[in-house]
Length: 556
Image 1 (cartoon, rainbow, N blue to C red):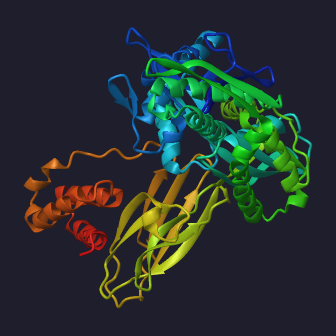
Image 2: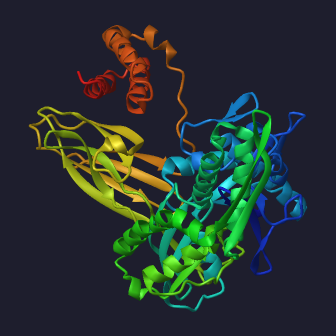
């Protein structure tokens, strides 16, 4: 079987590991180092550079360098490098391609398969785009694994006989995750996960940057935020300051000739104490409490029942973070795994399970949970945007859940089953991840026909949704690969030539005008695309249904 490596694609750094001789080993990059900065750039000759070389040019060419792209995964944001815009997927694929190349050299063989880690609280779009980045780099991505679960695997491999509740506290450069697991007889069972995808060490850096630039403006009357090159130097020094304050009580920030005004050079010279730094980030650290409470509540396990708290992620080195955890739980956290390498090592262990190097049936068994609620659009009273929950968040997978629904109007012969993911009771705030039509419902009075909807979700990221007409047994199902790339839009510009075009042309043009005045309304944009597609495919029923939805959103 082909070699499968584990990759921790992080906000700040990226690591890769391979399972060899009974243990995970970190793979050295082209610079002979275990850690690769998650930075991509274009050098003076126009060539793409990744890692340390890209990081080295941050100060000199910030306009040609990208960092912290992981935070943009799953968004429409673009990254500008030189004269061209790149998607977060493209930048991420460059980092993964670099990993693939150095892993191949290190192992002296072509590497084409990988397990890639993601924050537990990444939604399916973010997971899909991570998978897409892996494929673009030339990998067959065998599994997407949650970062805290990977870290727990790294710990569990050496503690197979333990019976305990373990809380993994994962605070990295850009994301925060917390996962609660139960370990018993070689089984790692994830009980619950939660997190914050916009909280991490980079936010600590940002608070320092705001403080330093504020002090500079107060003293010199100069706004550094308008100067790209000055800000690159301040950002770099803020990182050094944060790292130093993990072991020192104070740090002197010195940046000579930072900026000039009226031909006079100005320098930054500021002493930052650990106490001041902790004051700046206190509220950020406190933001970790809510996800912790969610995990404890969803798992039904109290803080007193926890046996161990494992720290993962470089930001857990900040003393305030460790003190806060100990105070919040009344229990001292443990450094039982390497906070920088545990995720990559755990991903390599998962890779070894997939490849058969580790016999999962006899050595190690792992379960996981779905981090987000899954459900369907349903009618509740006069609310036709209600999300009816089928599989609640933090349900152990694999799982199958069913719910029965009833026809909504007299003579209804078809139902459009829309599948959503998210925590809101309104579908407009959640993600639509698939839909299909169930036809052939006997035409009877409203509420007289039952429709059963079943969700089956497995550990490989496959969600099967089945709709069944109870009275006839007629059923339709779709398989939604939660880890495959999002659906690519097809060209629907030819809708005007379709036979149905005359029936919907006037409304579509009105909707297009409405959208121009409401730029950024993704819901209407998506519905308009789907309506044109339905017209192009001569699906009158679906086009009519979508027109009704569009009228609602447009306020008609």
